[in-house]
Image (cartoon, rainbow, N blue to C red; front, side):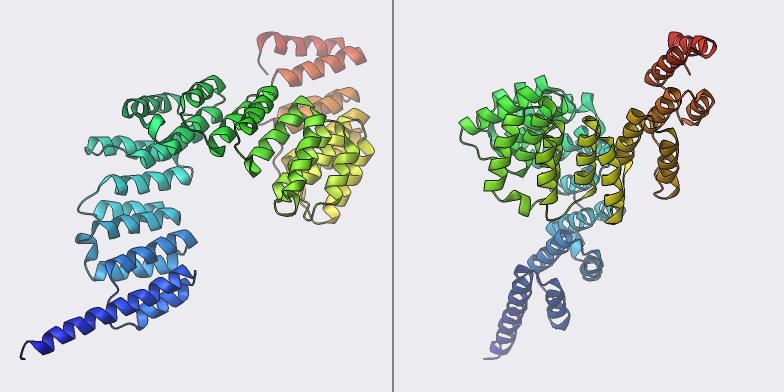
Length: 454
């Protein structure tokens, strides 16, 4: 009977901890992280490692770094990082998902043991937040540490290679994937590889990988279709979409956006109208802002301005993308008066114009020969909206000055171009010199063209 009391107490403690763990897990499942932390702090019994891991995962998902730091302190105080590898991995992952990569790396270096999961969550964090170079450096260090990547690591690495145009490294990693037979066994890796080559505009490489795959899902098809669009191969994108439908793979938002862009680039109005019907059937215009903007852009590029305007007027939310797309459509058809009306309407609705908007406006000024109006818009761009003019803006301004015979203004504008003019700028100015009979300046411009310098 003497041993009964300690045994009963141990069972009671265990039951109590299990009860608190269940309460905390229930809060996490309901998405109520605040109550989960309140329950943890009210408990006189330390949560289990399993519960700590669940809390860390929730903090990472919600980008709740404040409570993540509280957990880190609790875990460190109890010395759990030295005894539980899963907690260490969870902590690195939490900081990485919250974008606190320095903290993730600090924790990483304090861990007594690092496995492929530890390395992968850190590599994935750097890759996800656009630090491709750092992700690839970590990969090299991982190999030196004797840890070989798994399928998830490869997905993170391929994303990193795609974002920084690391062609040689990406090709090398492709070789590793082939040797491990992952293309046949892991669709996530296969999709990441097709996506990487598509981002680089290497459509033939993407095709080759695509054709080798025993299984393809919507992500695989979308990666290839978007690659064709990026390469300017709109017809191939549309044919690929037809094959996708023929194999019974349902399109999603990403598919519709890529196919609409392909319709616009190929001026395939018939297919565009058909896609509009599908989008309407899926009720996507009511739930996705971006799809509506791309639909406006597609109709505008196809020259169907009434259709574009009808879609635009019925959008639940109009963004800078939809406004600019419709303005570009009017500019393309030479309806410049509507470009300026749209611009004023957009500003009136407190939508700030962007770089592309001002390219469209200056293009309209050039078409109409509106020298004074173009000067106003060019000044407003930087003065009122803080937009630094790019080469395209300067190119249109030089073109406008040249058309108006304002050669001093044109030269002054050329001198403002941050990285110097390109061949298009000089060709436009040479054309203006020819039109106005300015032989002296024309000879100087010709010399710039001849020597390929500014």
